[in-house]
Image 1 (tube, protein in one colour):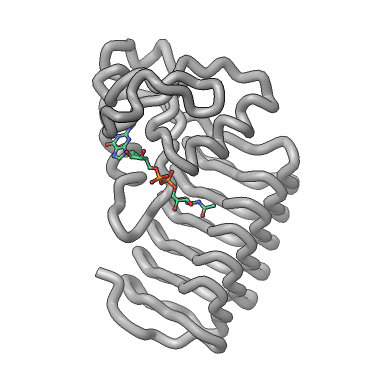
Image 2 (cartoon, rainbow, N blue to C red; image 1 turned 135 degrees about the vertical axis):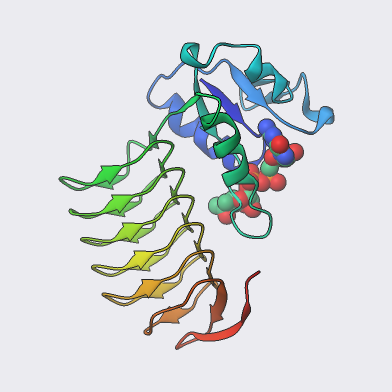
Amino acid sequence: MIILGAGGHAKVLISALRMQSEEILGATDADVGKHGRLLLDVPVLGDDEEILKRRAESIYLVNGVGGVLVHPLRRILFERFANRGYRFASVTHPSAVVGADVALSEGSQVMAGAVIQPGCHIGKNAVINTGAIVDHDCHIGDHAHIAPGVTLSGGVRVGEGSHVGAGATVIQGIQIGRNSLVAAGAVVIRDVPDGVTVAGVPAKEIRATT
Ligand code: JB3
């Protein structure tokens, strides 16, 4: 496995992968100042050219860049390498609880202490971060990020590329559009359209995201 990015999110992933004894060749990073250093015990090999030196079928990639909306680098990296035939591993921390018949898509990441109840779909390259609760029959779109401590009640849909901020609560059956941002701590009791930011209790639209 090779991890893309050598920052905070990558460190958390390395910790999860180590608990499953996965072999990690190294990480890549755009910052030359990190090249040759260690992230935990994993060497930073160089930039993303290090990946292209290896045949797509010979390695799995792990997307170590966490951010979704401010700059959609996480999505860009996933698409750049997936389009060249590279495969992204799905990572689930051993302490996460993943219910029966949950569908985890390519490159999805479920962090420590997260709970995903039955009937959920987690899209490609999506993150269910530390301690988040995703209750039954939720649909999390590709490239979406559910931040630490979020609670999604039953049957919530989160659109592609959206970010639900730390500690937010979304009541049952709500639909959140694509590329939208739910601010940290918000309580969402109405549907959220595409491309907007909502904040507060109850959450209200405060601006367009893009
Ligand atoms: O809130 C939590 C629990 N986690 C946050 C996570 C979701 O997002 C975390 O606190 C941070 O806010 C953020 O983590 P992330 O994405 O690891 O950010 P940072 O620590 O800044 O590391 C990003 C790394 O990606 C940096 O070392 C960049 O140099 C590197 N990078 C930038 N462009 C790149 C590229 N790496 C590769 N391989 N390729 C690039 O094109």
